[in-house]
Image 1: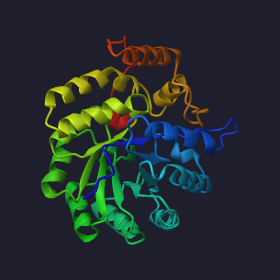
Image 2: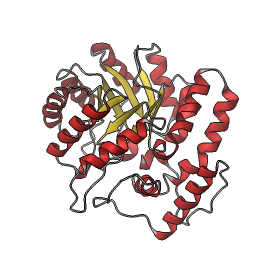
Image 3: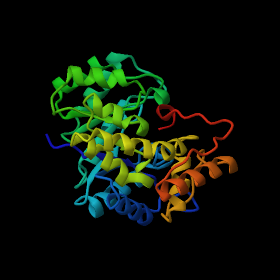
Image 4: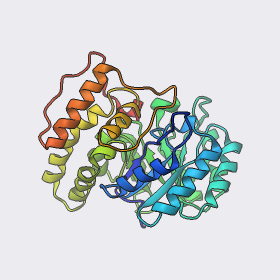
Length: 315
């Protein structure tokens, strides 16, 4: 089965001063990412500040990125919500956009459905589209998670439910998913940058990455090295990425990565509330980690007092 690629960047969204989406700048960021190690993009996800973007603006952005970048990489549209009917309606609309390669659908958040409710939610969405569907499992944000057995049931009945962004932070969940679905027709993507290499070791395909905004080529090279059996090189790249990965998750995503993207000269624009600028201490930590990474010899930066590296919470 053709995969979505090794590295899919959960990309930031550029906003104007009034909070509206700057489509031109966001497309420019998308092109930059695809030229610097990303095989594809996840558009309007958590990193893209999805909750602050109107449905109309999401559609406009999907169309613009698919039209401009669809021949350069895989385009995944984030369409999930905690309202099944609303999600189904949105899925139908997005599925009609030329150049969209797949859909990201999160486990319903806040209302915390049980496994049968989750099954029925994804079943309804699968029946509304023929596009490949990637389930997003992120208990740290959602408050619940999909079980591997539920996922396997869905894949058996709806083969185009063919991937998961696994961001539970629990390697055994990824391992169990591949035990139940060992074939190449189901892809497990790490939703935690720091766990990419371990997830590859239990049968994963790649990563839905935040860090790839600043380190996309190294992330892609790490996965390629693992695929080629060069575990030493893969481990070296994993270690090279460790400090910049920590820096990208010192506080809630996408605060660090959007700040870092601006430092790299990308037209990232403002944050939309409730996201806001990093604190002075956080910014200093990001600056140092980014500078050390760019020099190619990362050294451990002093951590902010409240430092908490937990990418499954902040991804």
